[in-house]
Image 1 (cartoon, rainbow, N blue to C red):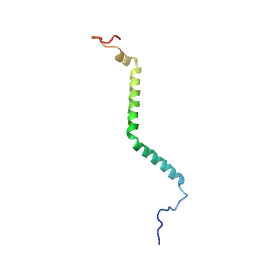
Image 2 (cartoon, one colour):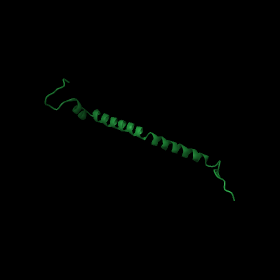
Image 3 (cartoon, helix red, strand yellow):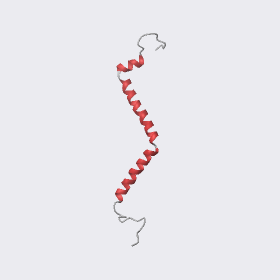
Image 4 (cartoon, helix red, strand yellow):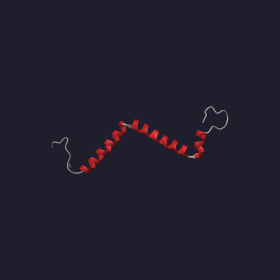
Length: 76
């Protein structure tokens, strides 16, 4: 009995599942391709949110604005 190569038994069946699998695979392929850039931007976004949160509080904002005594080299 000869075996058919390259054909599937359910050619029309499961097409929806195949497109979902192809979409998921393409998303993972894109992530592997642009992994460094994605993580680079995520780092800066998270750092910006943390810094923004710290500077929005008045008690922490005073640390960045006023000098705690001593010689004041800056006129402001």
